Image (cartoon, rainbow, N blue to C red; front, side, top):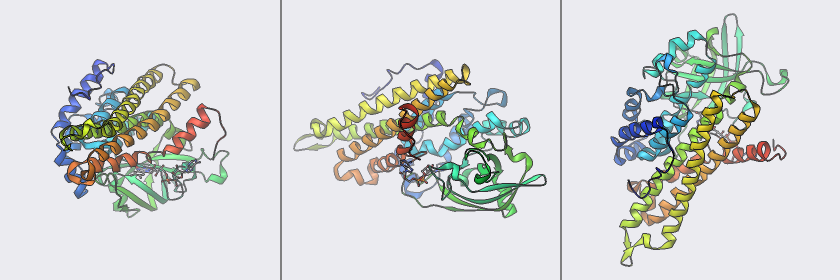
Length: 410
Ligand SMILES: Cc1cc2nc3c(=O)[nH]c(=O)nc-3n(C[C@H](O)[C@H](O)[C@H](O)COP(=O)(O)OP(=O)(O)OC[C@H]3O[C@@H](n4cnc5c(N)ncnc54)[C@H](O)[C@@H]3O)c2cc1C
């Protein structure tokens, strides 16, 4: 174990097994593999297939459907390891949707939907990698979505536009969030929103869906898209859960997902610190290793302390979220506590990984921007973690309003 080992974490046997197994897979993909993917923008298909073949995309699918039936406390370990294993935040993002988008189906899908799809997801034969919520006029303000699904006989007809929908190109299905009752006709703007499962191949064949990739600077090998729906017809059975309750269905599970994002951030932070320290120990300037200078050493040590704290908080919150899921899911207090921890963890983890990537770049001097040393990629990714899946400001809004009791800003 290196001096960077954070194995002081109290892991369960199952978490240890997850860590060992995922680490083993990650070790087959070296730094050059990720560098090439980043340069070419090519999706890391081999890596994702290796995870899928070993059943990891079915981590959250219940055992009765052939999945691993894991909880958040195992998935945080998995994503932390994937990011720390060399692929960074982007490697975790390459599979994130495939793991998480099965959750709405598990919780709210009809028996037919679950029986038809979940065993295939668990076996890596079908993927639900894409989740479409954000629109040009509805990002942080997600209840302002305008994409509409209207009933027409026994079908739904979808019209509208989505933006930033990730992994559409590598997905068989899309979980779509659309308005089924116009905003002006509902008592609360959180009502009248529904979730749908869209078979992407059928949608293209019908001519009801067009997509266009958004060129971007970070996570270049995980592609994000603009989508246009033009009279796309979906069968009645495409509705996930209860009509009009989709926003609440989206919220249910959101905090657990936020913890997994926090784990991806700390994984990236660990990776950046590892590279920064390696270079600091190896590079000599003025006849001594640069790591001997506290101006190099302290930012890395400080980032380590921050990453370690965020990681501990994330793992602890994941354990508690699983506990609450088993025991007191219905309790408002339990939900509020999970929400508080999830937003604190996401905020701290993104800041910690940003500090780690920045310190690693600085330690590398001019090579901090050379692709060959990878830290410039980590820095681009770390910057992105401050924006997605919610911005840092929105996480602070949650803490300010819901935890500290200050007035809402929107
Ligand atoms: C790479 C990438 C992948 C993504 N993948 C997906 C995906 O798969 N599916 C999906 O649905 N979405 C996806 N998104 C969208 C993402 O969730 C949104 O970008 C994010 O929620 C922010 O929304 P926005 O970009 O519209 O920013 P805006 O809502 O326009 O906000 C702009 C800025 O104003 C700040 N701001 C706004 N209101 C307030 C306030 N009240 N208080 C303080 N600050 C405020 C924000 O924090 C932000 O800094 C992705 C985005 C990116 C960049």
